[in-house]
Image (cartoon, rainbow, N blue to C red; front, side):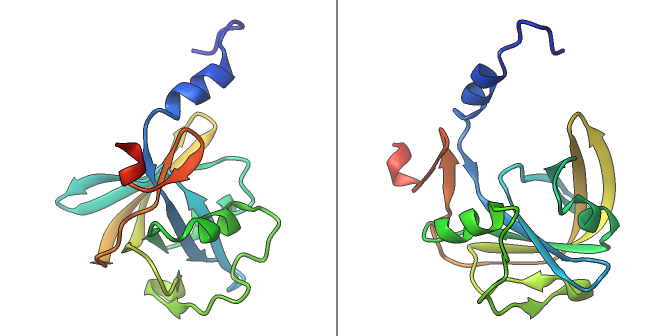
Length: 163
């Protein structure tokens, strides 16, 4: 419920108290163009079948590509990948410039480094206020013994810096 006295800045600051992991989610657009975006709204959903979910703003330039994609990849970033996260959060940048990717399921690009990787088939799209909630069935996954990148109070942090 958004009332006239609802303080959006205070709400955002309050949400910032919840430390989240940082992901880069990639897919292949209808024009075979690689598409990627930084996302912190990533969560596990189900073990059977294995499913995850994330959300993307309705105003995001990359939204049509993800709405039409059959497959996407979720890369959980490592603690040293803050620059990569910033790159993929910039809407005007050539996000894949200088990054050699491999082809995952359906051709969706796989970044060379990550703390964890989930290769997913799009299962559902749901309305969620000013976002679209995307549910993926996990087809393949892998992880590395890497400390994850964390976002807390508007900043990238290491796990130890939260203690």
